[in-house]
Amino acid sequence: MGGIGKTALAQRLYNDAGVNRCFKRKAWVCVSDVFDVFDITKNIFHYITGLSWQDEDLNGLQVKLRDNLSRKKFLVVLDDIWNDKYERWTAILKPFEAGARGSKIIITTRNRSVASITKTLPYCLKELSPENCTNLLAFHALGEINFESHPKFEKICKKIAERCKGLPLVAKMLGGALRSITNPDEWEDILNNIIRDNAMVENDEQSQLRVGYALALGSLSWQLMKMMHLLEELVMHHSSCQEL
Image 1 (cartoon, rainbow, N blue to C red):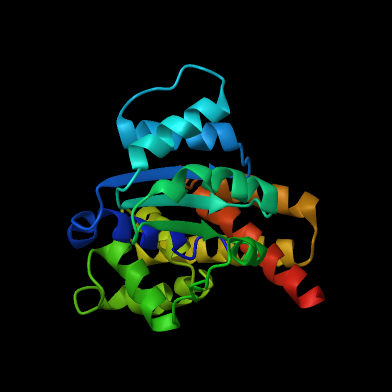
Image 2 (image 1 turned 45 degrees about the vertical axis):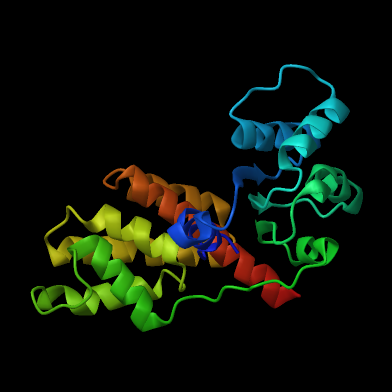
């Protein structure tokens, strides 16, 4: 599921000082839906060596990468993988066989089948609890996780947090969009826009959804636009899971 914190957690590990002391080489590549073995390998090579690869020879590139990883402990993060083709996965792994014992490859994915082809034990993230989601939203919108200084916002903040569906990315983006809005009545207006748009998605009335966005987005920031599109994706995801 998108927005649940997979990339954020991987970044915390990747940038942790204690983790950094354990590895001689590090690389981070955002893969997304296009799993191009050559491009991914080229990006990893650039991270590892600081050099750019100019040729179109995949075998030569993998040999050079293998040489640079030989007997060294490395950490490689492949973020947001969608590919579940076994042959492509084995092709990307060839240079890593030369690494030292204890080397790690971290993968983030929304697709459980990716974990199965990599023969790893997945660490599945869960949605935030309502309380934690409210705290996160309040932190980004109000600068603190309680409402002692903002009692008028507590009720509306909890209502908006419910619409985040436990997704930290949505809570963060929406909190950022609300940060400059100091009137709780305006928060109520935004909540009503979100409720209306979610209802349109759930009813699968795409023409009405476009009208709802047109009305809502006229007064909202680009951050809130992104958040609402993410909410649309989330509701559709839940609807498809219920059909299954």
